[in-house]
Amino acid sequence: MTTTVITNIGSLVTNDPALGDGTPLGLIQDAAVVIENDTIAWVGSADKAPDADTAFNAKGRAVIPGFVDSHSHLVFAGDRTAEFNARMSGRGYTAGGIRTTVAATRAASDAELEANLLRHLDEARRQGTTTFETKSGYGLTVADEARALRIASAHTEEVTYLGAHIVSPDYADDPAGYVALVTGEMLAACAPYARWVDVFCEKGAFDGDQARAILTAGAAAGLVPRVHANQLSHGPGVQLAVELEAASADHCTHLTDADVDALAQAAGTTVATLLPGAEFSTRAQWPDARRLLDAGATVALSTDCNPGSSYTSSMPFCIALAVRDMGMTPDEALWSATAGGARALRRDDLGRLGPGARADLALLEAPSHVHLAYRPGVPLVSAVWQRGVRAA
Image (tube, rainbow, N blue to C red; front, side, top):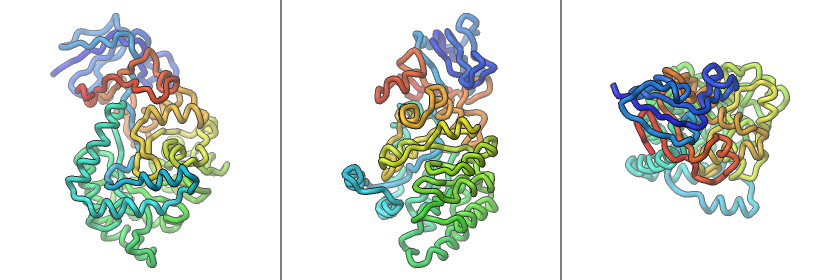
């Protein structure tokens, strides 16, 4: 058994009201944390910290739970700089650009895909992300989808089968045939590597009936649903996510009052995951986080890191966007990027710093978590512990 005490923490975010000041962030001032192997063993006032084998002095800086990025697309190859440049010059975003990445991903070797994945994971970790979910969806053949999930599953437990990203170019004239493949042979090949099943329920991708068939088949194979819902337009995605008790409805940009009410009623089951990097990178309408929070929905923030519509791995950047443009307070944004992401992954050992939680935490070069929004673009994460090990 190895123990480490991090002491002289100016402000500790526990995300447990009972441990701290009674707010959702459960703040403790002048705090300490004791790590035992890969788990948080103790939190409290620094003057009451038990002895440990080693000590780390936080020197009055803030400590937060590691970010939980519950929505990303990191198994890919290729580059879409030209598309981004054109979009920033006035061309609108549609789902069709995914095909460019599909072609590059199919042509890449396993080693190239894994190296690219690891590069992005290291980049995210240095910015405080200690848990990430990632999806397939850039292969769209049985073999390519299965290999994407196999590669991803070597590096995270949170792997999502997204054969239903778009209709494969190979089935452009037969979308029904592609749905049959996604719910049949492809699902059978991919399910052993995945925990989740997802579908892009959107114009230009899959309609409500197709999405229902895909998610129902995935659930029958033991995968838990999540849904790309209501990103580009109003549609059935949110209602379908709630009906099928999906873990999350992701994007949630275009919502009716009925959609907001449904997410509020399902707050204990289906998380509204907001992805402001996508709106930033496509100059689209911002999701209205304030509307969802005031209604009582559970909200998560994630990066949606992908090469086309949100090529950022920075959770601090997404926090700053959420505070500036989506109506969230700094406290709400941090909770959503940590505890909210854990809720979206149905994990109670992540996104918090209390006894029994996994020892994933980040030290900020700042006295308070508020600096994540107050100083946007500044690299404030100065140290990261992942599973109790100093990782960055």
